[in-house]
Length: 322
Image: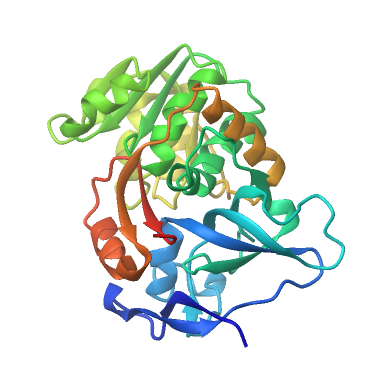
């Protein structure tokens, strides 16, 4: 049988559990496309999966068993079509958030994708940049244009603004109508975020945002965690919090302050249609793609170790095709 190189997880744990090895190449089933992967994005769900989802409540923890190939963000070239696929042809250049939420296998030379999860890669977007777009970009895009229906007004605060989702949110919320965008990140990202269009920058390592920001209409929090409630003072009465990750926002206190808070974070979904619209914004220069670093596929473990050190500026990408 045909084989390929891939990075597989043989046991839950630290980055060194990711092994670059030879595996069987998959074959597309009904409604699927086989893509020759040129680059793959690295995302937080990848390292959650690598650890066995231990940060998830037991009742919602996915029941995945190694060996696994991780990775849901891909860019590459269509090589084979499964039965019933008519919208793609071999040779088409594509990008996609593959089968999310659910299992995908992007850390490999070839990956399967539902045909509907893919979008055409614009000619002006290279494979590495394209692989940085899907999950992070779609998370921000769907918040701005699906959950909020493009009706963003007033002042928006983006916490964790320099990261994957954050740097897309700074740009897309402006396009969706925000009058002012306040970016919160560590000081070294100030120039990067102001260059993306942020009106104001807060260095949280020097001054907590909760001490200096007031009356924002929308808080997009890409950080979450046990200290998320410290951002409550930034939001006006009647304002809204849109969390990207789980966080302790002191829900009862938020209600007392008249702040609207989602019951749970909005979950990004695979959508070739949404991704095509987002890719068009990137292609026309209205949205920039931030690349933190690029690693060869065989160094996926090093990429995960780098990600866990935090303070990223944009996305980490694995270059699959040398």
